[in-house]
Image (tube, rainbow, N blue to C red):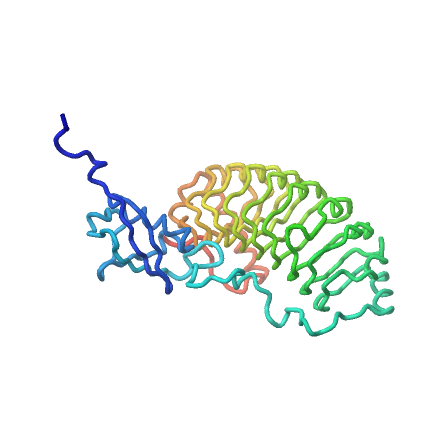
Length: 376
C-alpha cells in the first residue's frame, strides 16, 4: 500500500540555473531547497569571485543569502545576473569570458620579452673577466635561449647568476660546476616542470636563493626537499596547483613566495620549515590553512590576500609570537572574525608597535594604519 503524502526529498527538485557573468552564461545544477548562500559557494570556484563579493540579481531583485531558491521563486532555467565587488576575488582575479591560457598577471611585460628576430647577445672576453673578478654573472635581457658555455667556465668564481627575462627553457646538469653559487635568478623565462635538475642544484651546497618568478612551472618535484641549505624560494606568477610534502624538509628556509599561482592546499609538512620568517600565499585558491602553520615560531609576515579562506588556524596568534604582519584583504575573513581568535590582543599590539616604529623612522610612506583585513 502506497504511503500518503510526500517526503521532503520528494518535494525537492534539482534545477539548472544560468548565471550571467562577464559576458558568459554559467549553468549550475542545484536543489531548489538550497539557499542563495550555497549557490554563491558553488559559483566561487567557477568565477573566482568570493561569496561575500557576489550580488545575485533575479528579476530585478537582489537575492538574499538565507532564503532558499524555491522561496525566491527561482525555478529551472532561471537566468540570474552576478555582479562582483571589486577586489573580492581569489587567485589572479575574476574569470572573464575567454580566459587565455596564461593569465595576464603571469605574462612578462612586452618590453621585457626576448625578440625572436634579435640574435643572442654574445659573451665577450671582458665580460668573462668581470664575472670572474666580481662573482656576479649578469645576463638579464640578453635574448638567451640557452645558457652560454662561457658561464660554466667561471666555476667556483660565480656567486650570483642572473638570467632574468630571457627565453631559457632548460638549465644543463653541468650547472653544478658553479660550486660556490649562492643566488640563481631565472625570473621571466620559459622554465617548465622538467627544465631544472633539482638534484644537481642540491649538490651546490652554497646555494641559498632560487628565484623562478614568471615562468610556467605547474609542479615542484619531491627533490626540492634536498635543497636543505636554501634560505629563499621565489616561485610567484607560475602555474603551481600545490606544494610537495617534502617542502617541510627545508629547515633553513626563511622566505617562501608562491603568490599568484593556482595552489588549492598547503601540506601539513609546512610546519617543518621552522626558520620561515616571511610567507606569501596571496592570489591563490586556498580555502583553508593547515594547523601546523602555527608551528612557525619565527614567522613575522604572512600574506594571504585574495584567497577563498574562511578561517585561520586557531592557535596562529598564540603560537606565532613574532607575527606582526598579516594581510587578509580580499578573503572571506573580515576584521570582526580575526579579532575573535585567541591571542588577537597580543598580535594587535605587535603590529601597531611595528607601524609606529615605521612612522618614527619614516619607513612608511603613509601614516594610515592598515587593519590587514576588510570590514564585514
